[in-house]
Length: 363
Ligand code: SF4
Image (tube, rainbow, N blue to C red):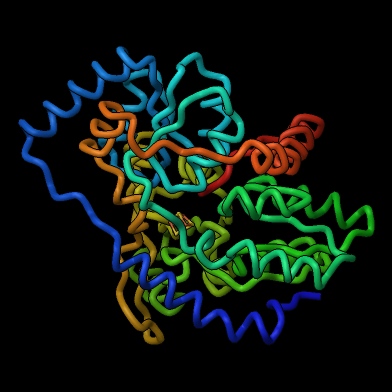
């Protein structure tokens, strides 16, 4: 069974899209910096990281300057769970998380004793917005016979209501395991990732109806046109993309899996269907290859997006400075909520350890 939520949830999706648009209207993309301003901010951050005993942890989709700075200062660049795990295991007393809010929350849940700051507290995610805890709880209560599996891109409250939290790279293994135990699944929030898992595993899954604003825009018609221009190009796609994109992709995988594939695949030209922030790392691991962003406009497109998350783009050097200087934008998660959210998170980490799997995945 693959069913996109109930009729009542479908009608409320329109409201979710309105909320997402309102959030998008509030996004504040940092202005371009002059070289001297940029260099001064970078020096200031390096000094602050030392004096505050802090580590900078950045997502692959953030500005390349932040990614480079994180690596230069013994911080970390990666996906959301690896960011949180690095935060838990590193020696710093303060974590400055460049990403979106649920990433800060995950870092805090795994490192309750550390101070977790963010360059901006306004950066969120369309998947998180479209899965509010009150409606999600009702939905779970309507289906008590189903095991609740949620994607990492959710609030701490939604994680706390779940049985399992998964990232994109471990989701197939977890669902396979649950299916083998005869369990029926309630999946949230990304419908495209949920459909892909359902189709691949054949599991009985009931899907919440939400999507990533970036991946939703990749268009299969445009991709077909692009293949005519680059007939020898491989297509790598993140499973948050619509099924029509995944159907023609050579490799479907998480950000980390895409980076690995880009390095190992023999094709010299590679079309990539995920946020273009990842191109910085792709070009580092395979400098001789040509990476092309998958088209976000086809005949059926309503707009031409930039293939870049507007909330990830809100993370700036100035934001890092402000936060480290004044300890603003601190992430706090209520203790009892964090304890409950930790249970499904830990279940995933234990599953990964016992099956020798990595939990790397996307936002
Ligand atoms: S790229 Fe999509 S899934 Fe990732 S944070 Fe942005 S809106 Fe959320």
